[in-house]
Image (cartoon, rainbow, N blue to C red):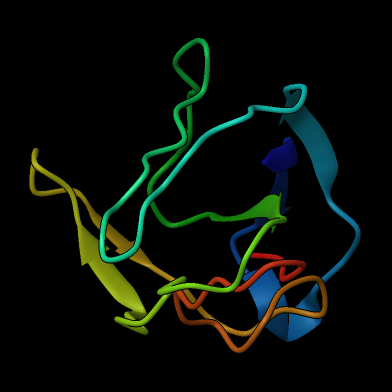
Length: 106
């Protein structure tokens, strides 16, 4: 289960001078089933406008069995449309990599 996805805008300086940010989007729980060695995409119900160069916090709590969650440990992700997302450490997240385990926040 993915508990309440929250997105906050942290501004251009992001984690260096990290503040609480302004909540810009929130959704309710999303139950899902993800067998071992598979991927489950969590999608927002509507598009979320973001600006290049600004940092955003996407906070997702994953609960359930600890299987292969986040085994790839990527800190840079390139989308299908060639948009590059860079993850970094945050006071509100894990180590800045896409490493998800039950109860962790990204």
